[in-house]
Image (cartoon, rainbow, N blue to C red):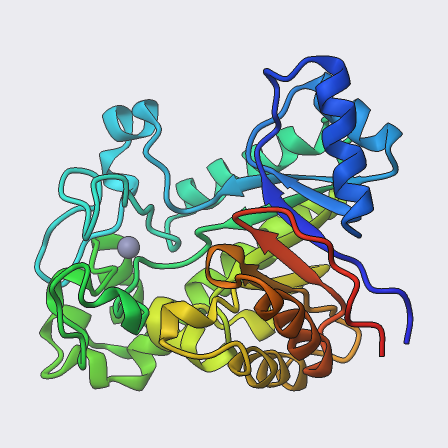
Length: 319
Ligand SMILES: [Zn+2]
């Protein structure tokens, strides 16, 4: 088996003193981590990480964007629910859930420009897309209680996007207004329109990154079937350099064993040359459960793991 590659989602630690930053990156290397997904960074952070032999990736929020400029100047770029609420003014679930509509050319151009700008960053190896999806039409089951919801079906206030652009485009394609369908969630063509909308956007961003010589990856929902059902990500069709599914077992009321099944489903559906790195949720992997989770991920066919919520030594999985 080739040497695995392991990743971590983390911040840039820009406020650390240089020697603290050095120790931090040494700790990552000692833990077996080779690639860092930075939620923020500056030139110094990237240069230092590279000096430690780490890959550097810009962890960016793609479609969930609460930028003041966008909310004020382009409220029409945001998704609209089946109930008619815009994610600009009335986001679902939580106040920061300002999701853009992936079907709009202006949104696509804006995000492609963001990727192109990152593509000019020195010492940056790649761009990592997060929130590259619709708002959860159904939440991971372990979260239902927290929001006091039962989501055995697609509820109108969480079902996106019914903006003018989406309604007109779908109507041109099929002759039907999605808002007037007798049962919109049951309509296969309407579901497919939305899978395609995100897929087309991602593949456009892939081209923008590759034009700048950067790699591009994404954090996705844990399995191809759950990703389509919950957030309309059809990620096996995305032309990324790698996928990092968030195989967070506890979000689905599952045990760590589930990680192997989840990874297997992804690996078997992906093109053979597309690496999958399994995201692990460290707050719910205490003690030896962490090592077991790593072994399950590798047994399922992952090329490594990506750590969220902490640093642990990855290394017990050599088989
Ligand atoms: Zn729309």
